[in-house]
Length: 135
Ligand SMILES: [Zn+2]
Image 1 (cartoon, rainbow, N blue to C red):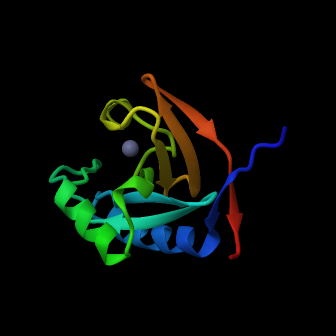
Image 2: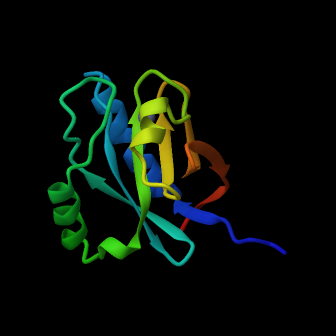
């Protein structure tokens, strides 16, 4: 049986890459939430609360503010996204340990010009297919 892929709008990915590239110059990651609407994943930016370079942290208060600004509910959150300034679009050890079990994780790597979607399950990251759609 064909399992529907997730789909992410190309324009949203392009926007996220643009913001990520600006943050990269300062060695900073960008981050946000992946919100599910049907099989579509929306990228909702959230302020990176991490003070360290090359890491990200999403504060609950920032997350709730971003969701309500878009009229979205916590129950629609399927996972997170963030950028990697210097490394490939693969989750690092702290990415995996910091993720909710069963959640999705989208990683944008600027230096590798790559974006990949993962499911974090039982301490492992499994690749998840997605379609870049025009609308
Ligand atoms: Zn990471």
